Length: 368
Image 1 (cartoon, rainbow, N blue to C red):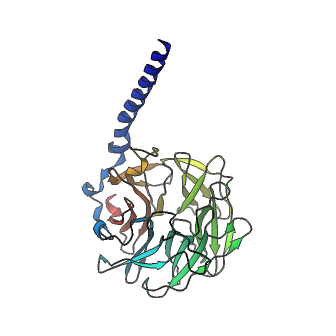
Image 2 (image 1 turned 45 degrees about the vertical axis):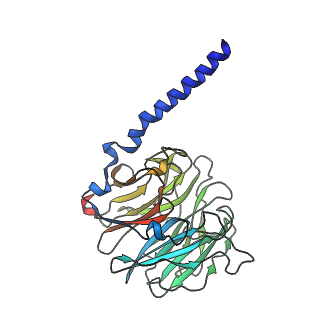
Image 3 (image 1 turned 180 degrees about the horizontal axis):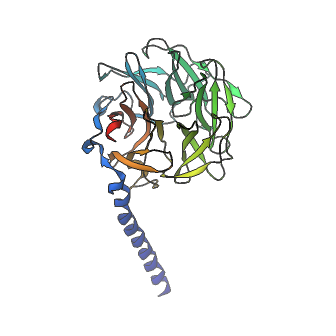
């Protein structure tokens, strides 16, 4: 009788757990406070795949980045058989006359190496001098990769030979911006939000005062013990403060603040935004508001996976956030967003679409 009761109690616990997730699912996926689906939102202008699913250049893709040039938008991502496979390289597509052109491969992990390695996390950035930079990582895993940099003088049509970024006593290999774009301060300093994973998940910054030729390191700014945080993005506030928002293992988007233009940072802390251990990106809009693209969930693993829903949230102060628009809400993975604001003030977002393509969305910030 005791054995039967014990089995029955296990079944009851499983049933209660299932009912809990059924009840919780609407709060993750459907509540009004998460905003409207993009197709029904007045701010939504356009959304399209950079390449169709039946015409994929590689079986899988991930970790996109986007930048505006004089001839249009340029996007990049890593693609290959699957993440970590040695055939994974860096791909680029250019948007000319409002149409994404056929992607082409610009880098693989065999260049200058003794064997082939996978590539990771490209980041595009245009400096104040007009130089277009492509940062990416090469190596067997995020704990063992190293940073590589290239330049383009023709808006992403061709690229210079790869150049390793070097090493640093504090962090080991220099990586450049680990996922999200740098900012450039008024004094010309390029400020790269970065992080490392070889000694816990820790955030640091890599800075350059000579347009990316040489680099210095600030941090790591935390131990990685209370908050295991990586992949920061940088926000600028009207009062001169800088803020970072990060991915974490603690089910929250984490944050830190600087009052001295990034020289020192406050202790890492949790924000009010959820995070299912997935990459985010954020920008400061021209009107001073802050915007983040993120997965509004703490759920990881099986359905309902936290990467099944992708949101846009707005804040006036970087503290109180309102999730105003849902980019995706369906089975599949929608993740690793990149976001910029173009010269015409429109917001451009790219993100992983089911690991099978990269999606590009345009939003009007005046209607958020």
